Length: 319
Image (cartoon, rainbow, N blue to C red; front, side, top):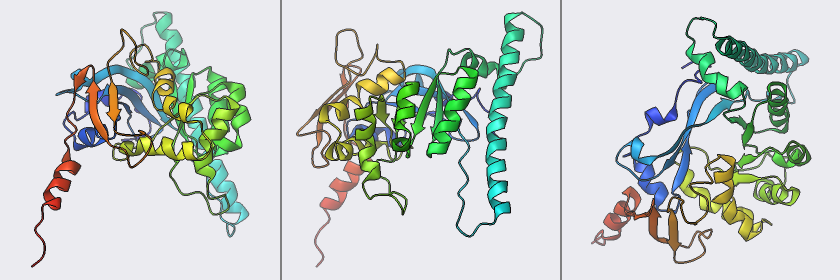
C-alpha cells in the first residue's frame, strides 16, 4: 500500500504452487521476472525458474531490478477546458517531482551511510541506495512517448541504469532510445492501437526497434498473460521482425537486459539447462510444446487447462 515500497521484494510473495506456473510452462516459458505492482516505487523484482516446491528452489536472482511505475501522462480530451488541461499537466509533473525528491533523499542517505554517520534506520531510503549508486537497474513502467522521455530525463539526472518496460509508443522515440542505448521490455504487441493510429502499429514496433539497433525483449504483462509470450514474438515476426531476432528477444536478449545471461538465455556448458522441444515453429500458435526441461530436469506439461480439455473432450453426446 502507498507509493513508496522499494524495500518490498517480490520473492517474498511468490506462490510456487500457483496454477499460473504450470499453465505458463506449457507454452515453453521457463524463466520469468516476478515484479511488485503498486505505487510509484513498487519494489524489487525477482528472476525465477518455473519449477520448484518453494521459492528458494525457483530463484535465479533476487532483487534483480527496482520497479518504478512512472506516472501516467494525463489524457486530454477534445472537450476539456484549459483549466482541466493545466491541472492534468501540473498533477503529472508533481508526481514526477515526487520521484525526483525521493531519489535526492536516497542520495543524501547514501552519503550518510558512506560517512558512517549514525542515523535513524530508513527501510525506504536504504533500499534505494543501490539504485542511486548505479548498482541496481531500474525498470520504469512507461507507455507514451512523453513518459519515455520524462523517465530518461530522470535517469540522466540521477545517473541511473534504466530499463524501459511497456513502451507502447517506443516507435515515436526510437532515435532517442538508440542514442541513450537504453534496453526495452516491449509490451502490448497484441494490444489494440489508439483510434488515430494504423491498425498494425503495435505489430511493427518490434521491427522498428530492431532495425534501429535498440536492444529489446518481449514482455506480456501480468502472470495470467505470460503464456501468450511466444505469440507476441510470432506476431512481430509476421510484421517485419526477422525470425532469428524474434527468438533472441525471448531468450538471449531478456537474459542480457536483466544481467542473468551467465545462467540462462542460450544453451551452453555451465549454464542452467532450460530447453524447450516443440512439434513445430515455437512462435506459431498451432505448434505444441512436447518436452520441457528446467534446470536440466524434465518437467510435466500437465496443468489445469489440459485437465479441463481432457475432461470436457470426454463429455458424452447429448441424447
